[in-house]
Image 1: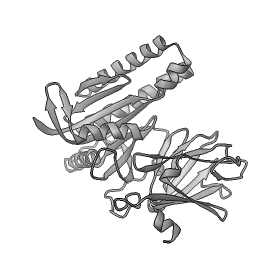
Image 2 (image 1 turned 180 degrees about the vertical axis):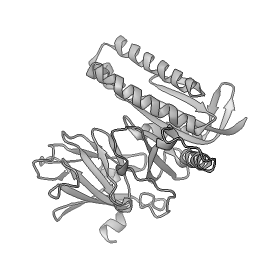
Image 3 (image 1 turned 90 degrees about the vertical axis):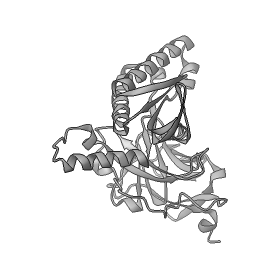
Image 4 (image 1 turned 135 degrees about the horizontal axis):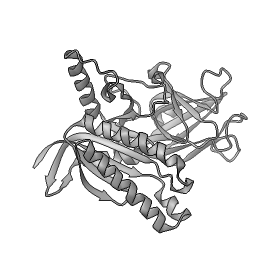
Length: 329
């Protein structure tokens, strides 16, 4: 039987490193405890656990908003409690949410919607929640319905939830590019850092014609280099061994890492003082990275070690397009 459902995939990050650093039985006990708790959170939000997958949990919901509520509750609660755990056992969560048609066979669930939730979880990185556009559309629709009823529920999570577009992405195993959003759950993130876009244009340079290799151009103080997906990973930092060197004392020795993950250029902050990203199509909105990730798309800037409001900040410009475009061919 096939119907429309919201699939939520939750995974713990860093379990491999934990097994290497701590007694395996202790790590396994923590993973079992956390995944069981994730299952209970899903059920408390009217979801159903489909199965446990080692350090992951696959669940389904009839309601997209309920799935988002569950994901935000998980991230807030888990991120807070692991602060008191031994560092080697601090395995953060990453969450993928996808709404669409699924196929039920017995107690299991299959289809592109399930695969997409799993892939989004893989791509999201630690402490992140990624969702497809169908999830965001349900949130918008329910907000509009509440507004039409004159409901005043500003403190409700539905009205408080913030999200930003990450653009169109090619997802491994799926034929069509997907419109992907990041859902923000951290109250410490200022709302003016979040870009909320009602629609997506088809002009994102992240997705090119089939068979065209993408490249990313980086520029700082007149120095420009173009890297292809095959050049990844690329280290950005202060020391000469980095592929792209920014010789400013506020830049860490190995400040950030560029990777090619499932058809997208992903920037990971590995620095002491943080990284900031802004896109030309997002006005003054900024994304702050502190040991987490951001998908780069189209054109923008990366501030290293200090935010953009510092006029002297070392800022690297970037542009993503086909290699033919980058080289002027």
